[in-house]
Image 1 (cartoon, protein in one colour):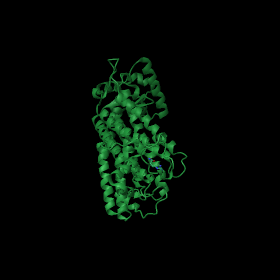
Image 2 (spheres, rainbow, N blue to C red):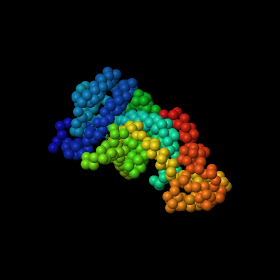
Image 3 (tube, rainbow, N blue to C red):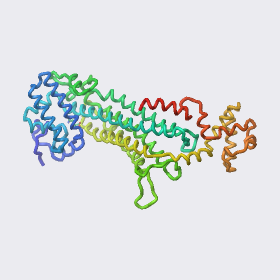
Image 4 (tube, rainbow, N blue to C red):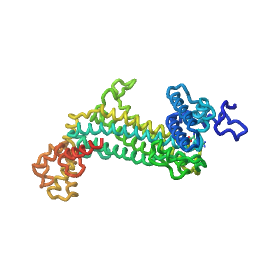
Length: 460
Ligand code: ARG
């Protein structure tokens, strides 16, 4: 089956490209998302070409006007990209030719689709880094709000998913705050490498035309330009880095989601998700599920898959450009969209959760997680920590066997384990005084949480 249109590169062939082969290799259905970036890049390129007298001023004007119309057509849907055009760059160039005739052919002077697509991809990543930063920022705002609201609420801190020590809930929320601040820092750092123009590298070796690559970089708002034309078109390390940053964001969200799922379960019962963010079951009428959190956790797997896909696509590619690299778009777009939408929905979900303060107060006041307080009490009475640990372990064993909670053990009983114990033991057997008596830097005490909040508010 032969094709209606001639492809951009067809002239040296005596036989038309096979239709099935074109269908297989066409990327229009994916890269059509880049039409705005592609047109932006073309306008900058042709503006530079005119300034350098490589094309006429009037010709450049015609090309720019045509490109702007095409952008409107693509946005409004009056121009529907067709797969037979091979990729979005060709869709736009073919349409330009229909509109302004053969002068359209001057746009591609000194340019290859290799530097063109590298430019589009960088412009896309630049705007997505902006979206991600904004979405992270919104989540940070919710986290600070939660930390303020629940600063004085005591929850269990866990290690190994076993109750470990009581902590301020504010401390817990600020832990995630710190992780997402680092995620934002990582994006800022990535931006330094993304915001570099590859335009003007042409296919990979440069051009005999007097291109001014610095000027097109400047027109596109890039901070700098490539220094090696091969490197400019043939690496996708920043795509890998971008997906890696998305993966870390998703990993943080996924852990947080896991906590929400567990805590909202009947077994934990620490937290309520409001009905607007919970789902039910089509068969079990009593069910209230945390599907949104589960989906965030699940989508994390997809983004990890994208990272592995990109690492594998690039592995073993000989320099410079290879068509394999066209496969970068799907993982890139999917990772960006998944991370942005997950951050946004997770912030909203978090806003729609409340801690069950009464229940938590009751649970934390009677729990064995106060045992570390006893050990540190003994240390303050000059007992070596290892002995204090052993003595406390015996107290815990007795408490479990006799079903007496730590604060309800009599002082006489305590003294059977160690005679240094006095009435003052009871002041450390309260969850709030336990939390509050933490003295160290960045600890879970209310005062420390307040100090952390002062810093956190500056970063929101
Ligand atoms: N659609 C291609 C891509 O995304 C554009 C570059 C094509 N270049 C080539 N030499 N076939 O990578």
